[in-house]
Image (tube, rainbow, N blue to C red; front, side, top):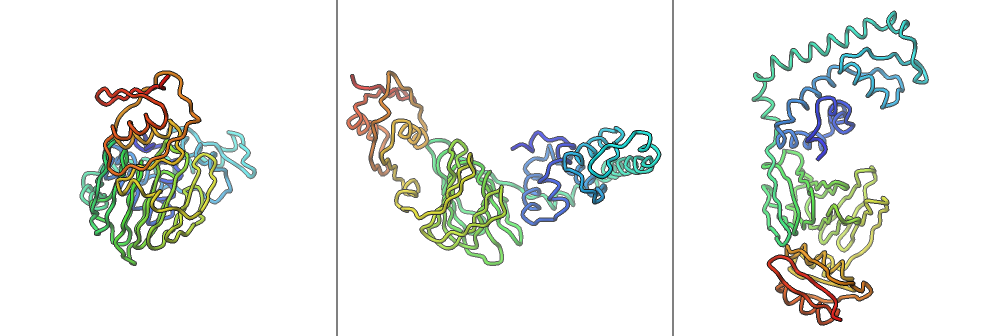
Length: 350
C-alpha cells in the first residue's frame, strides 16, 4: 500500500487522509485507525500530520488544490509562501511582505506550537492513542491453497488461492469492515441491521446487512466481479458515488482498465465452482488453462515449442489430482507433458 512509504508531508497532501481529518466519515475513520494499528512505524508521522491539519485551515479562496498543496509544502519546509490573489495570480514579494508577514509568523507559531505539543504529550497520550488503534488480523493463502475463516461476528469467509484478507480483531460498535487486499473470497455474512458489513478492495466497496456473495479481485485480472447468491448487496466503485444494487443471481462486472461497468445474471454453478472444489474449463485456450492450473495447484509451467492457441479445452474436474487434468489436456489438445517437482513442461505432439 502506498501509505507505507509516506512521510509527514505526504500525509498532509493526501486527499483521502485530509478527508478523514475534515469530514469525519465513519468508514474513513475506521480504515485509518486500522491502518495506524497495522503500521506503527508510520503512526507518528501520520499523527503529526493530523495535528497540523487540525491546527491550520485554508480560508475559502477558490484556489486550486495543487496551489494549496504547494503553499502547505512551503510552510512545512520553512519556506516563505506566496500570496495568491483572484484568478490564482502571484503577487509581488514586496506586497506580500507588507500584507502577509503576520500570517507567516502565525503559521510558524502554529507549527512550533504543534511540534511542541506533540513531542511533550506523545508519551503521556500513548494509552489514549492505543485505545483508538484497532488490531488488524491478516489471513493469506498461497497458490494451491484455500482457507475457511470464521469472523468475530459469526460471519464465514472462504478464501481462494493466492488471496489476502485483512480484518480487525474485533469489529466496531457501528460497522464491520474487512479488506480483500488481493484475490477472491466467498462471504456468508451474519445478519445485523445495526452494523452493516463492508468489504473493501482496491477498486470497489461492497456493503451488506446479511447475505452471501462472492468477490473476485485479483490484481492481474482486468475484470473485477461481485456476485450475489443470497440477500441484497450494494456495490460502489471507488471512482464514483453511484451505488449499484444486486439481488440473488445478479453479478456486477467492473473493467479496472477502461472503467466500464455492467450488471448481469450469472450461472452459480460456473462462477462459484471454485468454492465447491470444481475446476471448470469452457472453450479455454492454453494460456487460460495454464493460469488456472498454476493458481489451483501452486505449480509453474514451461512451454517448449510452438503452441497452437486456436485449440480450445473443455472439462469439469471435482477435487481431481493435477495429473488427471494433464492427462485429459494431453489427450484432447495433442500435448505431452513432463512433471519435475513443481514445474511442468508441456509441448505439442509432433
